[in-house]
Image 1 (cartoon, each protein chain N blue to C red):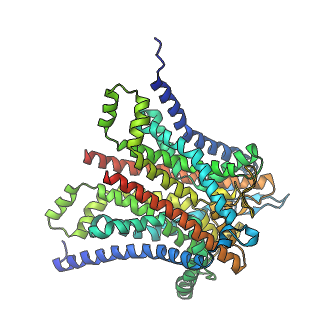
Image 2 (cartoon, rainbow over the protein chains, first blue to last red; image 1 turned 90 degrees about the horizontal axis):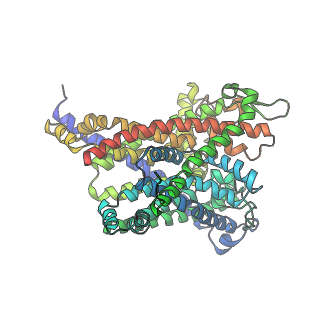
Image 3 (cartoon, rainbow over the protein chains, first blue to last red; image 1 turned 135 degrees about the horizontal axis):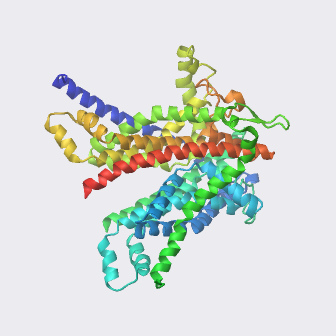
Length: 276
Length: 313
């Protein structure tokens, strides 16, 4: 029934080779993206480009806006996400928690543009009355919270039960155990999960289109439109002028550096976990 | 019987309420989308799903999302056709074949694909991939196979096919890493049994490992589909943004439109309430498609990873 041994061995080699080709094919676009972003973006980088506003051909407001978005979203989203994860891990042995878990899972896969529409209709229309950093931060928190909740739950589950029991046996309350023993024990896991989530929202574009809108000038207040790197890249890439398109590549280089820095942070944090 | 209020019970209730934030987010989305789209659904009913027009001119309004639903399905279909075999090859290579030394750096590279923001994929697609597609793939295909309607049209590089290709790259990290976990979750006894009757490595993978993990791999593919369906920026930047009946995906080499790209292009500039409502309706349709896909994937993947838990314990 089986073909000859030599042919089977040849097939084995062939498929090893094909799988290797698959890896190579996947790495080509990655390397091309990094190469193009660096080579086309690096020529743009200078102090004027990084600090001037958009009318003077700079991306200062976009960098500032992205940092404000990261800060505000972290402020709103990280505490909520982590405490949700704590609930799911430490008290999550019931139907309510498994429902929350399912909803969280569905939310992590929500199309981000839908979240943009929701934040627009809720915050831009009813709360701030205009495009605003707050609306952007709410939209990005909607994306961040489910991711942080899930990674927090996963890293708390890795904390051995003996640590919980040791603390409880000393007569420490469960809430105190959770906050001062279990959370620190899962520290590097929490940092990793949070950084991954922040890296993800730093590059989000679609929800920002409907919430902070874009702006040529630096931060003007919490009820005014604001700029951010992803939407600056998007708008610049649609301009016919080659000069402005080149600015999009410069902005892309800065954005990718921010995202890569966060990812390297993840590597460092998770290395700490394995060495312990 | 009264229950004593302790620090613990307060803590539990407080974080249970915080955990409900997920429900709040979900309900907020569902509420906004259903109320926001009520104008367009009450006026056009279910013909909103089958109509091909997108005409915001006052007095002659007519809205339908059929071309964009089809555009979403066609681009995601192309993404799966190209991306899934590649991802499976990568997953098999990383889980079963690669020497230990290269495994970690290679899987890091593949994961890095997921870290690149989608707007940068779009930028690269618009200024780099587009020309590769046009010169090396679309013009030859159109020249020799142009008599097939699928490959007819004018290859311009900004079309449904390029959008599908860029999506196929973007789903690779999702599909590859989940399938890799599924493959690693297959118990070693299965492999050892197969080797012991003289199977080659490839035969073990093909006939035993993949068939043991098939529902998990199916779940990984559906997760990738979910990512492709909801992807906005990269698609918006390369698909050519056709509107109305022109957006029907009749050929690979024509500008098209997906649900997310439609919304990204038009939502902010739409002046009339009914047009805004039509965009919200499109978002509702997109959300329903995405939820169905992801709930399906959730149950398929958890079913397999439970098997893994059992094997470890």
